[in-house]
Length: 212
Ligand SMILES: N[C@@H](CCC(=O)N[C@@H](CS)C(=O)NCC(=O)O)C(=O)O
Image (cartoon, rainbow, N blue to C red):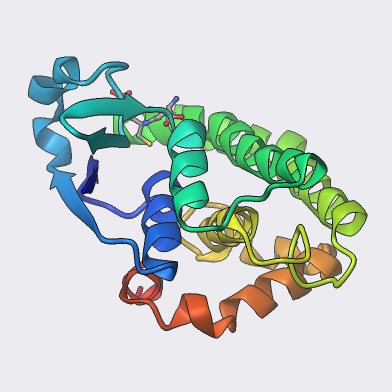
């Protein structure tokens, strides 16, 4: 059986794997590691990072690789190579925007340097926030014919885009005014559609992510 390991908080990197497997009723085990105990555990993992997936006692890393594996199992990837390129770009976009906001998160969480974090967050908002979400909207506009899903068929691209938009509009990120999404009406509409897409919203995993 597939086993997933992540920290004791929800984050898109693990949530997209869980949502994909759950969507297609693929059983998996899930283990959470307490964040405070991470320094003692980090060296046990092949790239010193989470999430990882364990299959037959072998440990695999990196969100995009794991996402592709889980999505294929869940029939939420694609056979068409152009559609695969669209899905992969959404996964890479999620990594990129995460890497752009990460320094401001790290400054607060690890370094406890809140002044530095504030400066970095303001720079991210000024230079990256809207631009990177507008890149995602453009990809959606170019790729989606039905205006509902990135590849016109529900896939891990939709789960990933939804999960990252949820993160940025949930009000949990300091100084990010969640109404920024109003400036991107097609992306907002996509997000609202997925927020009401019953095969996803009925899942306990979805409910747990969105409960606060
Ligand atoms: N390249 C990795 C990045 C994963 C990553 O940055 N994980 C973070 C948590 S979201 C982590 O493990 N941080 C702890 C550390 O780096 O020590 C991936 O694609 O999954």
